[in-house]
Length: 240
Image (cartoon, rainbow, N blue to C red):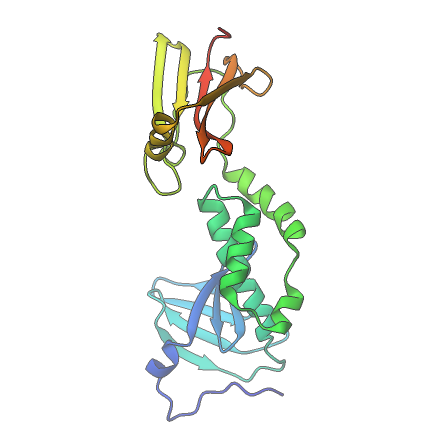
């Protein structure tokens, strides 16, 4: 039996700093204490009752509604798994970024792995980037706005800005009321690159436009004398 009882000399305030919270795969809040995971069993106006996530374990924790520790009782009848918990917390960080950013899932995965400095045990539990990307792509799609079927729609502020929170939607213009809408996307940095370039390259495509738009028109600037860098993306209602 693994004991996790609290010595009487240890005050609850000293243990408070060891409590953290996470979210389950089903979106439920979890409490973490000394590498053990607890789920919410009941909630009242003044108290939250947490029980160990292992169904055969009788350890429980009580907190108030502001997450302050009230009591801890019982001894765990199973070992903690810090490696698996470390992996879960890392996945939670990745998921939070994936649902709040437009950065590619692969890039988020690589960046968080580099920062995490995982133990060998935790690394063994971690999904490969291909497995993780497949699962998280479904979660991201649920948060992605539905592709509009017409030209009259609101663009969420999130999509009007670059990752740096600077303006990205350069122009949003209706040539006719309720129809023939023009959308132009470009950041200030991209426009400066375009204006500084002596050579520009323009091309268009008619195959990937959404309903009621006719073409996507792209403008590229010559950079460092070696390659062309996209500076402007235009979604147009005409083919001219």
